[in-house]
Length: 125
Image (cartoon, rainbow, N blue to C red; front, side, top):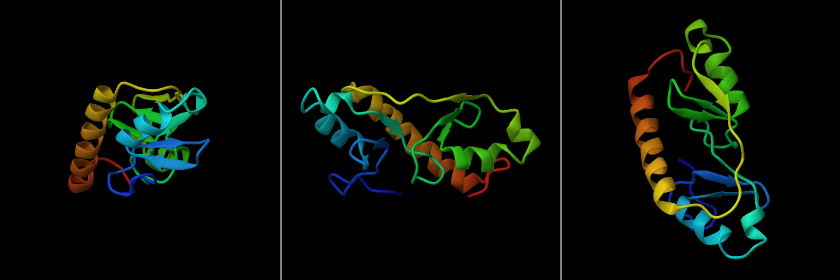
């Protein structure tokens, strides 16, 4: 788990390119609702697998968001995984509604734990 660069306590779920910061949902809301300039910052979710890079692909089949390298590792070499329902993610900007992101964050953390424990599919940890 990567912790938030702002508070240092909660798990980071979003990456802000302009600040080069990994942020939890609460800190992202705080930082990016501060002023008009901060609201323009492009942000993305953090890869569910490596937790180090901005996610660029959503795998609906696995319920994960992945960076390009992890997507290739997971889907590039396994015939079963290559057929998964995947789509390109777009960065977003502006302040977000915290209730939606909190639910997403809780679901993603729960999914991540369950997946690592079960060892599903062709996934490389």
